View 1 (cartoon, rainbow, N blue to C red):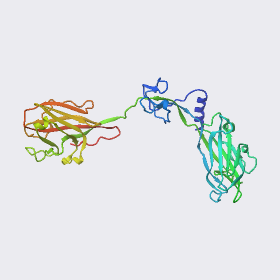
View 2: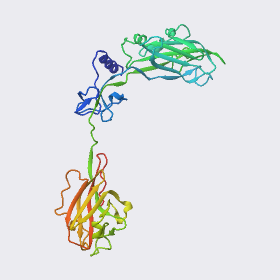
View 3: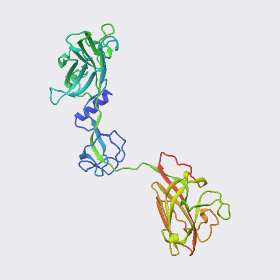
View 4: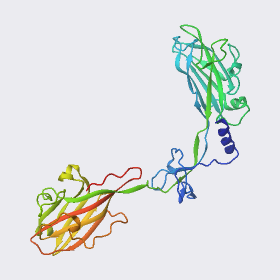
Length: 407
């Protein structure tokens, strides 16, 4: 991990950007310059927050097209307990999470970053001394001091009350690395940090970790790892690509009007229609007035509309001897067949192929057909018998299997 991170950091320092692409396609443009960017094929990468100036003109979120390692952060070992004896929890002065390691701006060195060590003693205790020693992670940690005294990095520390702080410039850490480096990316160090306290009981406390020397005192060290997460250095407004979908045969639909629908089964002559569906006996005045309107329902087995899927609506209006029928489907549904029965006589069959209209039957197998309208020349009748039938497909995500069609 260290070698990869250092190599990336070296490229950045040399002025070479490290390119990693997000979900971008050909035709994308740079957010700020409008220049072309984003290759046609690109694996996804992590995103970041974008400023108002970087938002796309359509309000969508830009995609990040070029990334490079950002400022270093403590990725592992950022917090440990303050232990005031051989075993954590044995002493009332122990503090859960009492030691933290972070990278922050140096308070007395403008423009520089410091490795910040914070040691917080238990409430009511007073720090009387502070100790800090740091080694490269590859160096034998048993060379760390195992006894109180003038530890090598004490000069970066101060304390007041029950809080101690050490501010070690990153440049000092870099010089400690083996070999010395110009970046903390992927590096790790061993840190021994402790305090002497007085109060209820005098004690010496250290950040909980690994014992420095099993043959000597119980003083401990922690391993702290640094990382440089990738940050976005260029973002683009990329064309939105719809998710892949497929068309599924949903099944048979019939027009339904509450209070007017007459079931096939038990009403048609001959009475051999064994499946669900409805027809209508409608006065011509109704069709020339407001017309007949209803819903298109799929899968109402046993004529139970609570089982059905509502896929859209239909209307039928009459002008003279011209009947105009319109189907309008809801989003995501598609007409694949349409059959209409319109006559002065009772339908003799419930088979859609015998309905007679439209003639010829339109080819709806191509592009998505969310609406359909036809005009039918009919005889002049006092009352009309009507049936509205369709076969319907549904557009579903490619990962979703097609359901079994309902007939």
